[in-house]
Length: 127
Image (tube, rainbow, N blue to C red):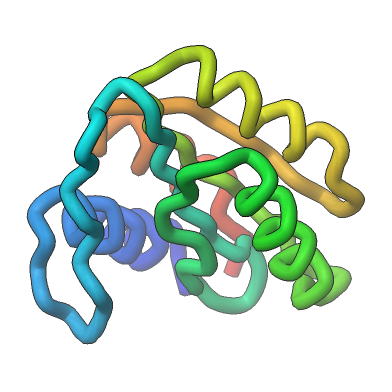
């Protein structure tokens, strides 16, 4: 997968969650309290693109799911967590668990599709 393919895949995945498009995935539920949740997306950087994480309402749940995701990584893959948080405090709590996780993990906090796509295309695996 080249840089352009990877960028397009990430944009589709990102827009899917914001627009609740039906592409074979369950749409995210609308938050009941927009000030108290953090949304996360995951992508394996390696031989293929694969979303691995959706939405987490608690840091503990995030830690458990991220640990499981890291265990599935191959030696050539990096787990990138894409975060969009309305509430900075909840984002910081989740980032703490990511910092404690074992594995090659990168975390970014972004709101704009274009900025996130640029990050991913820059870090996409070389073909």
